[in-house]
Image 1 (cartoon, each protein chain N blue to C red):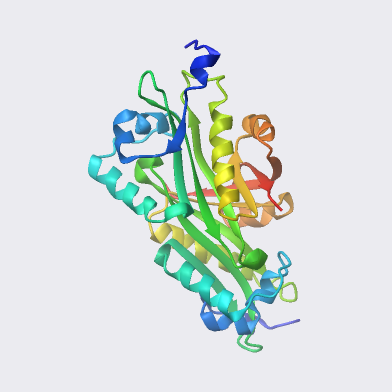
Image 2 (image 1 turned 90 degrees about the vertical axis):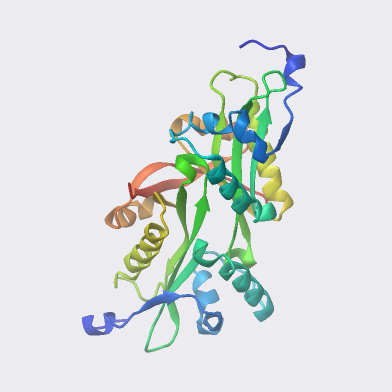
Length: 155
Length: 155
């Protein structure tokens, strides 16, 4: 999809709303990792659980004002520690930009929005895990490689 | 410090208690990252905030039954996602074993305890970030290298 620079300006970023389920939010996440369908009730329940954490959990989205589809998203949760004088760390997760709409700096917009959120609530750092292929992108967003991620999968 | 195998058996693992501040818990964390002193009020406030999350946040400790000092700790928080059918991911953080008491498999005990917690609350995975030097240790705990960690520090 080709769009003019003027059109690019009109991609506002905002918090996830419960109505975004009907705007392709789950289908967008499926570009990251395939899920079965999520019922409206499951979605509502998880949405309410997450929003109950206030600023300690936030999912942001970008809605295409032409198609009214959600075309980019990312989440952050704020971890409260005893370490670093009862410090807080922001963890960015589940960042995805619609594969049909690349090259519009939407990913960078998402990361900046989430990082600014972390800073505004007093985090001393914001971290994320990514593949080596995405390292360059995150470096452009001001991140530096810090360590390695290890994982155990139960299923 | 040399201890017999019999003594090693007597290192029970349990959740952090508010009284652990007076048992060297903060001093142990200082081996990971230096903090200023934390007041009793700050500690209580953070403790109550974290325990309000129930099983979604847990700090475990091992207390030396001879010195009554906290000699090992680790934390886990449960991230709730929309991804993976409203899946949950366990994030392990701030693992430290007293540098005076190494070689007793206390680190492995901490990781197993935290991982089992993640499994018991229905996580599909448990993840952590570590230095390349600690990769071998986490592999022995059943973890595999998955990706890289990127970070931005605000201070």
